[in-house]
Length: 194
Image 1 (cartoon, one colour):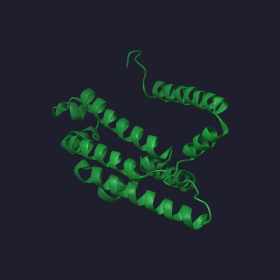
Image 2: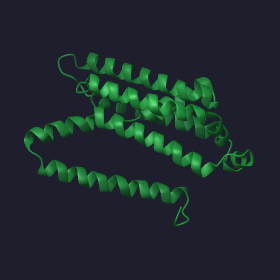
Image 3: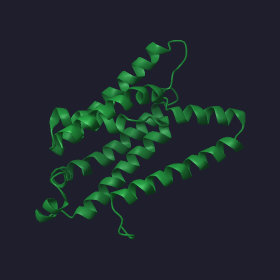
């Protein structure tokens, strides 16, 4: 916003951040003891096996804290789907709405990643599936996204156990292998409709 950049600047900034944080992760890996390195590698694959009831309670508390605020903003978020100008014309403070929504999403993502590691594509594929099933109204879409995401995680964890019954295959591997083609097909389908 300060530089007046658009979507391309945001994407390039995101790519730069990915490389910067990958370098920091590599420094941590390089300087870690063998035991810590094994835990770090396992964390980067995303696994539910190390999450206990404490993590479940923490995540539940954060969801219980954040969800009411998200549901209160549901009508405004639905209006934003029509475009910034239309949302602003019906009285939505677009900048404030985006900031608070990103704050809530960042908090939820940070806690989830801290508890179970990096589990990719659930947060991308789940909402797309929920939108296809329930439409754009965020009063239905937000709870639907939560339920679809939980279902995807449950299915991925079950598939991970079926594929590797003797050892705990990290669920992040399964979500990435399945999520990439599903996400690409959803994006191509969306692009064909546009």
